[in-house]
Image 1 (tube, one colour):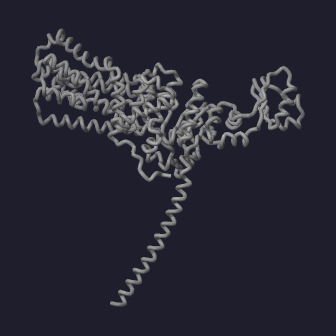
Image 2 (cartoon, rainbow over the protein chains, first blue to last red):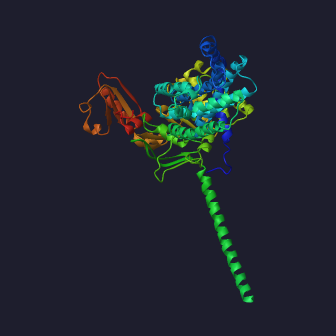
Image 3 (cartoon, rainbow over the protein chains, first blue to last red):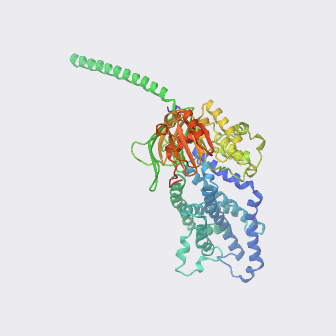
Length: 263
Length: 349
C-alpha cells in the first residue's frame, strides 16, 4: 500500500518559512496601521523626555546623557513589547478565536514547526521594532551609526526571548483576560527594573540580584555597550544568558503549547 | 589435505543449495507480498480498534473501519459522537489512546510516525472556516501554497485552476468579509485542494449553506472522486450522506454502530415505508392486533410514526385516522439514524 518512493514533503526550513511567510503577509497587509506606530512611539517618548522630563535630569548615567541612556533602552523595550503582545494575545487569538492554527496544522506542518515559526516571527518583529526606534534615534543624533546598526539584531534575540516566555504563559492561559496579570505583573515592572530608565547599579543591593535575573536587563546592557562601542568580556555572560534563556524556556513553551494544539 | 578440501567443497555445495532454497523462498514471498500489496491498494484507510479519551470522556471507543481508495466515506452521528475526533486522529491532529493493538493506516502511513507524509497527501476542510480575514482571496491561497513549498508560478496556476473549479474566479481580489458563507466554504475547499490531495477530509462541509451551494459542492466532490480522490466526510444531513457517500458509518457515543452503503443500511435496518401522523395517536382502538403487530410505532408528544414494509397497510391505516394530517413516504437514512441512535438527546449533544 505504501508507495515505493518517499513522499517529498517540504523540508524543515521550508515549513518554518511557510509559517513565517504567513505571519509576514498578514502583518504587511495593513502596512500603514501596523508599520507606522513603531516609529511614532519613540518620537512621542523622546518628545516627552526632551521637552519635559529631561530638564530635571542633568546627571549623566553610566557616562551617557539621559536621552542617550533612555534611548538605548527603548530599542529593547520596543522589541520586548511587540514580541510579548504577539505571542500572548496574538497567539491566543490565532489559536482559540480565529482558528488559524486549525488551517495551518492541516497542511504539512507539525505543531513544533508552527510554534518555532511563531518564535522566529516574534524575533523578526523585535528586529523591525528596534530598527524603527533606531531610525528615530539616529535622526535626532542620539545614536551614531554604524555601530547602532547592530542593535536591531539584539532586538531580534530579545524578541525571541520574550516570545518564548509569552508562549509559555499562553500555554497556561484559559481565558484571554488572564494575560492582564502577565502584563501588569511582569512586563510593565520590567520596564523599570532592568536598567531602561535608570541604572540598576542605583538599586538597593537586595533588589539587584532580581534585576540580574530578568531577561530585559541583559538585552539592555548589551545594546547600550554596542551603541556606545564599549565592549567588555562581561558582555559574553549577557549573550550566554540570552541564548540559554531562549533554548530553555523555548523548550518548555513548545512542549506545553504543543499539547494544546495536538491533543 | 585432499580430504579436507573434499569436505570444504561439500560444505560449499551445501551452502549453495541452502542459498538457492532461501532465495527461491524469498522470491515466492515477494510475489505473495506483491500480490497482497496489489489487492490492498484498494484500501486507502484502515482503522482498527482505536480509542480516544479526553479525561474521563471516551470520545471514540474501539472503532474499526476501512475506506476503499477512490470512494466517499461518511461519518454520521449526533453531536459529540466522536466523528471529528476520529477524523483528526487520521492526520495527526489528535493522538490516539495507546492501547496496544490499535492501528491507523492512511496510504501505508501511521499518523503517529508519518504525520507530515499524510498531511502532504491530504486536504482538510475543518468545521469552522478559518480563512485569514486580513488577506484577500488570492493571498489566502498564496500563503497556503507556501506550506506545500509550491513554486510561485506553479502556485499561481494551481490557484487559478482551483478558483475556476470552485466557481470563485470573479472573487479573486475580494476580501474575506465580502464573501458569503457559501463562498467562504468553497474557498476553504479550494484551499484544501491546493496540493491535489489523494485524500480529502471534510468536517460538515455543507452545514448552514443554501441548497444551491450544497448541490454545487456535492457535484464537485463527485467529480473529485471520479478523478481518484478518496473522500471522507462528516455530516448531519442524511440526504447528503445518501447523495454522495458510497459507505457510511453511523456513530454514537464514540462507537461505530452501523456500517454499509446507504442502500444496505436502509434495507437491513428499517422498514420500507413510514406513515407520519401529526399528533400522538393510540392506534390500538383503530386497527386489529394482527395488523398492529406488523407495525413498528415511534411516538413522541407531537407526532406518531408508523413503520411497515407494506405500504397498502399503512394506506389503510391512514384512511381510518380522522382529522389528522398524515404523510406516507419511503423510509430514508434519517429513520435509520433515529432508530440506531435513539430519539432522546444524550448528555454530549
